[in-house]
Image 1 (cartoon, protein in one colour):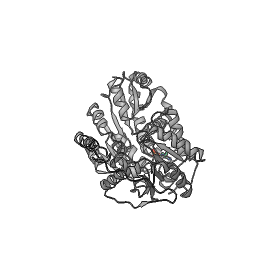
Image 2 (cartoon, rainbow, N blue to C red; image 1 turned 90 degrees about the vertical axis):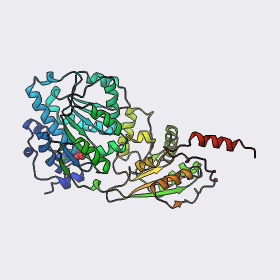
Image 3 (cartoon, rainbow, N blue to C red; image 1 turned 120 degrees about the vertical axis):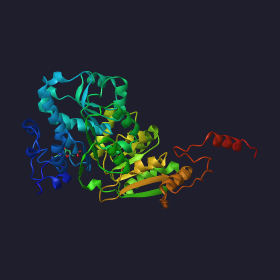
Image 4 (cartoon, rainbow, N blue to C red; image 1 turned 60 degrees about the vertical axis):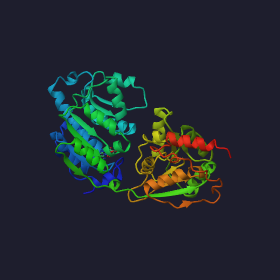
Length: 439
Ligand code: AMP
């Protein structure tokens, strides 16, 4: 049965909520009281199946789309188990120096904050008996080290910062009872394999593993199989679990015309929410400023911005107050926005792999995403290599008034800049010899 609409619940949830109640899932009355009916009227399918199994301590492998209520699905049983274990000890005094009871690994700082807020609101009734700590990179490590001194019950962490904290001896993972990998596919997509390997090596063998992912590529299957013991598997079909359809376009123009072209496309193609990739922080600032002068709400997004400023840009982008975000590849890792309608490669990515990551930011369920790449005479060889690696050949569009007029420079020896196959020393020597030959 579909419940009537009420404020604050996503439309996806409306389709999935059932008449089953949270009372039937084995949660204690205290925790049930923490579930505000306005926010959590009834369990979602993933919560229905996940919570009772998680309470038994079994490993779980979930494939469910983002927005299916998975955070509360694992937060509720973890809080339940924690409150029971504290009952046996003298409450907060049972916590050991630097020890962590439940470790939740997430790919981005934004998700870390979001998950942390869910835990804090659902465990508020436990007061000091449920300590939730959130750690992520890009901010000073000292307050995080201080915060971990007395140990923590729930630690939500991004992998890089967690390793930094381990290096500083700020925490110990030998007592972790439950490990949650949230958005495991994204953790791998962002290249955290090595960090995960190191973190897993620091955990005790005996523990519960909760593994959540929106997609199930081969790399995820391999990781899950290496990690999980006799897992209970949950598959929730949903709109975002469908493979995305991405329309790719290449527009051929001069380097100097790209900002004008971006403004032109924004207006003529009525682009609504655009993530633009640029190569440098400087470009991110300059192009954003030029778009703003043209009346387009644009903001830079790069590593030199404060955490507060990045949060603000992200929030404004999600709310459509900012229409265009100009991001460097590194900063864009923290841009956790699902289902973007459009991405633009203002500067081409360094590698074919980066190209896949960038365009993967777009693609709505049931609605195609759009990925536009600006190709210029100077980057044509590089673009050809990206296409070759992807086994595609896009038609190169030209837009009236923005046609390329510069000549294509002669191809440099080597690979034209594709990451991983840079010109070798020999290539460089040959290049030098060629350039010093008399005419
Ligand atoms: P998640 O998939 O964890 O990112 O959750 C997506 C959204 O659904 C969040 O805003 C949650 O607050 C909300 N949510 C989670 N569980 C429920 C529920 N049982 N009923 C309604 N909304 C929920």
